[in-house]
Image (cartoon, rainbow, N blue to C red; front, side, top):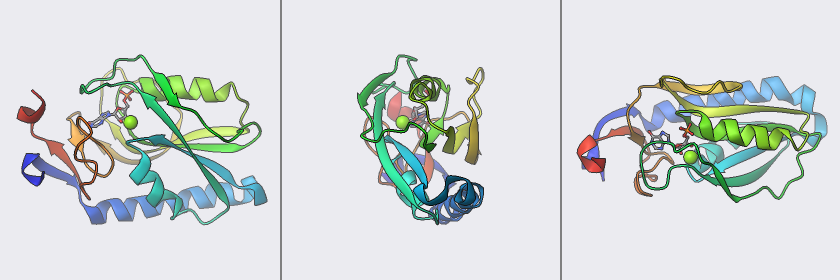
Length: 182
Ligand code: IMP
Ligand code: MG
């Protein structure tokens, strides 16, 4: 597994530090506004799961977690732009303050679709916490208030991100050697 990685971009410690800061920022921004009802954190499966689990434990206020699964990639390495909802929310988000927790914004097409879909359900507010934002040309314009790291336009894995369902359990984020997917 580790031999398939050409370079470590973010170490376990980098990730822990940055996710803790993101949680503190969210707490500071939302604690008063959201009141006792708190916020709803929507984790986008499966890539966002590990990030979300660390993020919610760094947020010090009432919150609910829910999960959505969408598919946009199949087993390839580029977004198709065709998004399917494989698992929908159990929570009614009408009137709630919603934060979507996503692993990485690449083309932005997945989130663009998802945000339009969720907006139509009438949340009080909605924004995105993305662990990473890729430096991609023609990225869709997404209202993303919290970004953990900017990252280069390479195919990366670890800490939830996969290639063909593997490498999600790497504790760090690294660049996958191109010969693995070419
Ligand atoms: P987008 O629709 O192009 O923004 O793609 C978003 C989704 O593609 C993310 O939620 C990731 O799950 C996946 N993705 C994008 N770039 C990478 C990558 O470099 N490695 C692994 N998954 C990625
Ligand atoms: Mg994903």
